[in-house]
Each structure stands twice: as structure tokens, then as C-alpha cells.
Length: 418
Ligand SMILES: Cc1cc2nc3c(=O)[nH]c(=O)nc-3n(C[C@H](O)[C@H](O)[C@H](O)COP(=O)(O)OP(=O)(O)OC[C@H]3O[C@@H](n4cnc5c(N)ncnc54)[C@H](O)[C@@H]3O)c2cc1C
Image 1 (cartoon, protein in one colour):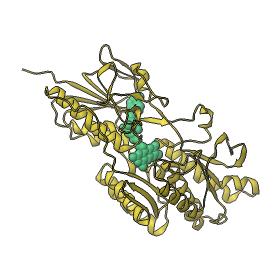
Image 2: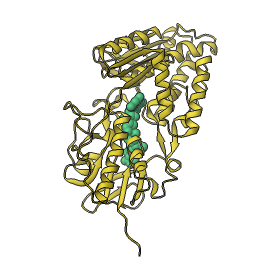
Image 3: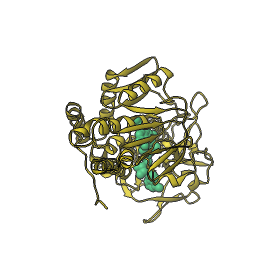
Image 4: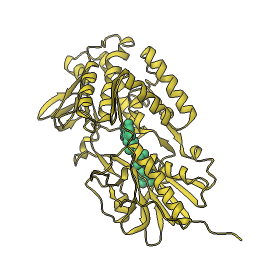
């Protein structure tokens, strides 16, 4: 006699969704994992793809391959466009609706331009492989064009790079561009010298890395300035165009601008008609369920969950992963008739951010570090958490090689030149 097993649908194979699916491996449920992309992406290293240090395949792995050993899991490549919560169905862009008994929404977030979406064209953010390779193309093309440009002002604009947003991504991007534009390329180009390029990091607040203690913010500023990055604090971007960025009304001629400020959640709240915060994140209860939807959980960047200090938990990978494991346990307990865990508790192991290829800042609470030792720790942590043995090995070897030679193995401009 066949028994019908509970159906769990996970939407999004990012950090949260994947952790949930892995924790449900072997459980007495049928899981459907739906993602609009065929790969899981290690976003913390995207900036290295954008600055030609790593290749896309080093930081992404096919979802099907990751979950191939989970016999209770099938993978669908499709875009979720809505949820019919009355009939318990997930609506897809191209396939037939998928029924669920339990639904885990882990669809992440994108960048937000704070109502100025017209800036996106000129100041792209990095969230996907396509974003990162588009930025890589923009940065490398600017260098190529500068090599032959004879007009002084135009050449200056081509060699000016503005990164908007002084959080970890902005600091990492600015540091990596400075190393690429000021050091790595000078060997391969004939007219660009290390001093030709200008990298500017613009932050609206009074310090970089606002989530870190002030002492580490100050160290990060010193370290990034040593790489030649100009840091502008308390500086608001007022306009962005094809070859300029306006900061506080002052125009900076710059061919390349990169957006690293602000996030906007996926439309999960709209699909459910649920309450959301200002960034569109679904408000969830302490057990990560969405109010009014007892069998729907929202986790990671697409949800807003209050932390112990009454502040929402940060949008970082460890929160998403721990929430994924938590909801898997909650579902297993409910199915087994056990009492589910009452409230999600985030274990914060600390914050890390890197500055170029020889410095980082680390905040482990009582232990704070900066400089080269912190960078080594940052490298080990990032390699450790990469999915897949091939990726780990490839990234470790590439970093050692880059470190010794300043080579940029992935310095490829894809697509034709106009
Ligand atoms: C450039 C960058 C650097 C970062 N650096 C760090 C760092 O150093 N440390 C850190 O802890 N965090 C970092 N983060 C944040 C971290 O990556 C996120 O907090 C984390 O990815 C959130 O996990 P998630 O599972 O909620 O969403 P994601 O990992 O974003 O996954 C969402 C998944 O949902 C899928 N999806 C979205 N919409 C749909 C749809 N409609 N239908 C089907 N599938 C859909 C997407 O394709 C994706 O696979 C960084 C983020 C970025 C962008």
C-alpha cells in the first residue's frame, strides 16, 4: 500500500533554501526545489568575478548536482510568479502549478536604488553572475579604451571608478578595483601606469562598514586608503549618468560606477498578500512562519525576523543558513507529531570583510582582528563555505597564484566590442 508523503516546496536554492533542503535529506517528505536559475551562487565572492580574479564557475555550482544524492528531492528550473495559498499551490512562469503541504520561501533580495531605478543602467550592482560579468566587462573595457585614448579629460574619466556604498561589498569592490587598475594591469598595458587610475568609495554615513565596531571601521578606512582608494564619507550621490557621478551636487567624471548600496526583497510578501517592511521583506513570527499562513515559512534575505535586541536580523548568509536548518527541523517535528522548536535564535559567529588581497577586518565579538592575519582567516572561511570540492580547490589555487603574481586569470571581456 502506498502512502502519500507530505509535500515540501522550497523556492530558491540560495543559502537559506539549500540549507533547508539539505537538512530535510532522508526525511519522510517529498521535496520540490524551484529556482529560476540552474545554479547556487556564492555571492560573497561575486566581487572577485566582477574584478576578474575568479571565474563564474569557481563560485557557482549546478543545483541539480548539489542535490543529486537527495533521493527525496526533485529540482525544477522555473520562475515562481505567485502563490495560491487557498489551494496550496505555487504558480510558475512556464510549468504547471506545484502543490505544497509546507512551503519555504527563500527567494532572497536584489539591490535597491531608493526610487532612482534609472541609475541602474549606469551604476550596476552585483547580485548575479550576469551582473558580475557585466561589471567585469565595463571595468576591463574602460582600461582598454584608456590605453588608446588621447583626450586627457576622456582618459581621466575612463580611469575613474566610483563605488557607491561603504558596506562590506562596496569596500571589497573598491579594494579589488584599486588593485586591478593600479597594480595588476600596469604590467600588461603600455600607457596606463599605477598612478593614472582613481578609485573613489562613496558612503552616505559617517563611517565605512557600519555594522562593525568603530575601531574596525577606522582600520578598514586606513587600509583601503593605503591601496589608493579615496574615501568620501557623509557623501550622498545625487545623480548618476553614463559618464559621471554627482556627489552632493559635485560632478565627478567617471566612466564606471558600481552600486553597492541598499537592498529590495523579492516579491514574496506580494505573492502572499503579507505584511512587509520598507525593503519589502516579509514580516515573520519568531518561528519564521508568515502570519495568516500556518504552513508557509519565509527565510533569509526575503524575510524580516526580529533579533534579540529588537532589531531585524542582518541580511547575511549565516542567518539564511541557520533559518533554513531551523524550518527543516520545525517541519520534521510537526510531521512526526513532536513539538516544534518555538523560536529561531541566531548564533552570530562574527563579521568579516576583506580589503584587497592582503588585509581584512574581523569582528568575533570579544576578538577583533585586522590586517594580514585577518585576511588569511577570511580566505580560509570563504574557501571552507564554498559549495563543492572542485570550487574549493580552484579558488584556493587561484588565490595562491594571484597572491604571488598579481595575475588576474579571469581578465576576459566577453561579447563583441561596438
Ligand atoms: C555581492 C554580495 C556580497 C555579499 N557578501 C556577503 C558576505 O561576505 N557575507 C555574508 O554573510 N553575506 C554576504 N552577502 C549576503 C548573502 O549573500 C545573502 O544574505 C544570502 O545570499 C541570502 O540567502 P538567501 O537564501 O536568502 O537568498 P539568495 O542566496 O539570494 O538566494 C535566493 C535564490 O532564490 C532564487 N529566486 C529568486 N526569485 C525567484 C523566483 N521568483 N522564482 C524562483 N527562484 C527565485 C534565486 O535565483 C536564488 O537562487 C553578500 C551579498 C551580495 C549580493
